[in-house]
Image (tube, rainbow, N blue to C red; front, side):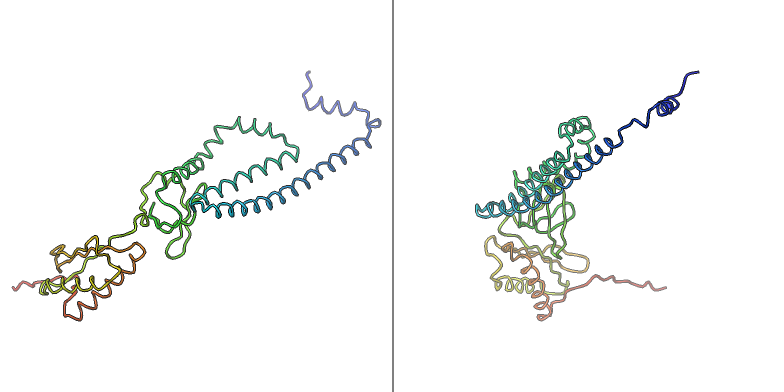
Length: 290
């Protein structure tokens, strides 16, 4: 009857001469191996800590060099992120080598798992390529106010994988560069001027010419409103409950919201002062007699 592998191992252990085994030599080898590994581990930890400190210092030096050369803030944040990640990866490879793990074996392992690794990083690679596309075609830069993917805010950084926005209520939003490079982006800071579109309502019984004259006076008195391109005041629509007057004026982009809010406030006060009604939605019901 053929013996099983388990029985063969047990038989081999029984046949061994345990009295002649050099236990001192084995113990010495184990202690030596543990000592060497401890030294390697301590060295690797020390190198990693010192390496992170050096990377932090190099990033600061690199930042100062970019500042002195007055590099564009968009390129500055992207390059800084790229350099930081590259140096960190290099440090990890050095630490692995100190621990005695052959980097050639790691390369072979990554090569054999290339398809799975590529699929796992496909999104990151897309975002990385998207970052290059943004820097190349420059649909926006650091400091611009943009709207994209349902979010809007001021561009704070263009990192290697993400664009960082700061919203008007001071929230921080991270948007992947891949999505931004392939989607519609509205840049409100690209042009020096912006048009302000407003609709003002008056009642059907009010004097349209008087309302138009009041609007003209308000616009002419505001120095922030540009004279070129010319502003527009026109009857926009005869609505169900109101006569709608369209007002379109131009202002410097930094004055957009100030002029927008100011016009609404002043027009409301002037219309009330001159006896012009600002109607609200209403429904007239006629009761049929029996």
